[in-house]
Image (tube, rainbow, N blue to C red; front, side, top):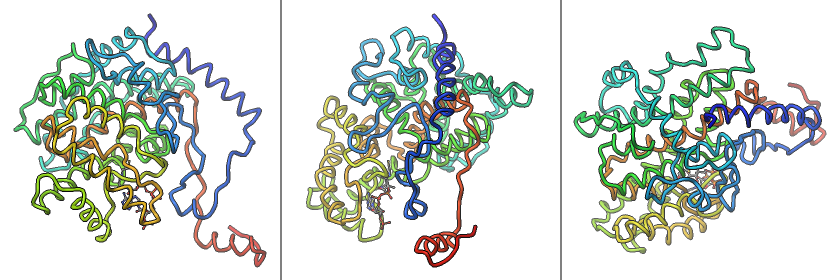
Length: 443
Ligand SMILES: CC(C)(COP(=O)(O)OP(=O)(O)OC[C@H]1O[C@@H](n2cnc3c(N)ncnc32)[C@H](O)[C@@H]1OP(=O)(O)O)[C@@H](O)C(=O)NCCC(=O)NCCS
């Protein structure tokens, strides 16, 4: 059986050649326009990136290589006796574009386990940080501490032909994916469990070993990790973590430098940090109201108070989605199956009943529906992970699968350095005047 790398080469090389041909023939076809509002408005809807691994439909949500989450849950290989998909299978799908077999996935689990040893200097770097440093900052520093191991940076220095650079990018990406759970678990145990570290169990799959190293023995938590690490892996190319990774990688920065950039973007509260913000907001609501289970009326009042104080309701809204996020629904289904009576989960469901109408009534929120972050905290808390500052690190471990698979494609396709044109308000004003016929346009 050929390795994942051989399969990737078999699939991607001919695809890269076809894309070159396509560009020669059709490169000048216009796919869209940009208006001034988009220039100032975070480039919403500007179709200017190519990402192979997944794409996002505003109404139907994420499709990984065309497969929606319910279909993935059905079709991706599972652990023995398990019901949740293995994230290794999604990695295969995103890289190769086809569903893997059980053997394919087993081979990836084994390959990742074999690559998972973390150099000692990484732990020393982490030990040197004040323990109160935010886990996402520690995680990013842990990734950067491994950069000296980059095979891509070495290959570039040694003058490897640019058409072959995808090979070392692939190796770096797999090494990084293999090591991330260990680094994340090390940070968790050092910060929250008196530095009680757990040795990896290389016989386990990637997600189960992560749960094990985090010190969780419950099979339910392992199951949750498999689902969590699958559904957070990718959300097409324009989101902050994916785009940052891609942008930095376009300068031929290696996978460590590029992924650390993505993690730093993920650590923003409007992006991945919403993972921790939701549960903080819910716990604050309980504390402020002085009740364990607030009624829908009380939730409604608290939501209005949040909005009146100029804050967003975390876990709601999205830059692209215009419906309930299928990643929210997948977690809701997991909860219905595994923890239907959990108090906090029921609060999350009551919030879901209340928030969309209120956000809708503001008249400006384009998507009043919940996103992925609205549910995850309640599930993690149920299994005993109460340190919500850590939640975005879990997101980061998962996000590596998508953005690093994309980085391998970027190098295989030989995509150039990213460099959109920026402009000044002075230019925009001139442009408006010129368009209205008042003056002549100059740069
Ligand atoms: C995700 C998010 C950043 C998308 O931003 P966006 O694309 O600019 O969203 P919109 O176009 O709908 O924003 C229009 C207005 O509605 C507001 N809005 C959007 N979502 C909101 C929310 N959940 N609560 C309150 N107001 C919200 C915006 O802040 C903006 O207000 P402004 O015009 O006064 O600045 C935004 O919905 C948000 O802040 N959500 C909460 C944080 C979160 O859950 N992030 C995780 C995303 S996966």
